[in-house]
Image (cartoon, rainbow, N blue to C red; front, side, top):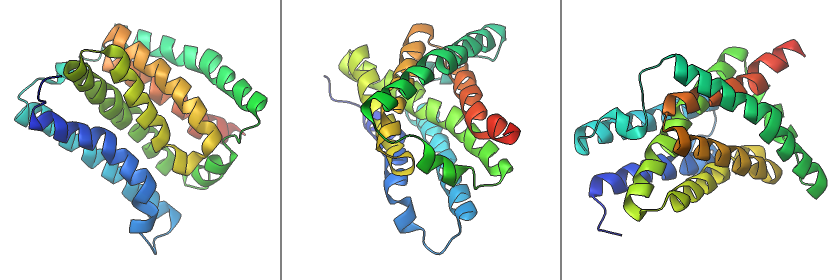
Length: 219
């Protein structure tokens, strides 16, 4: 591995370390606020991380957004995003649920009770944050930069997926981390195959919308 540019080190620290630090430490840093205020502040910090990483890409690295896999939104991005969403909903999620049942690990009850207590508009914001911000940070930036630094797609994908999954542990608990490894691994593989971050965003938004907005609303 060559000496990595400082810009990339800073970018990776924000893209991977930022969400992980936020998930682990945010409750300790923000005290006295209610659940809605805390969640909204957390979403805003995530968007600030996205702005910072995009600024690093454009201004410091002097590279285009296409280096993150960003394409102009079009029919093919929508098509492949919906295909990926279907694969997640009908393939990956049932597989992950079955593994939780077999292993006896906890499910999503802990996190869902907290998330569904939030107003619907804030859950919509959370879906947008997860679908857009997480895909830019964990897939678009982290995978492309780690791949360039190490020359290994496998290392780039595995490392980013592990951080992605562990960043969800404080809210969702131990069992769901396994499901985030599987879903994150699928999204990482899809990104490496298609190199279309917009398609990844579509898939992520659709899946999170089903779990946090539409299904609860119809329950």
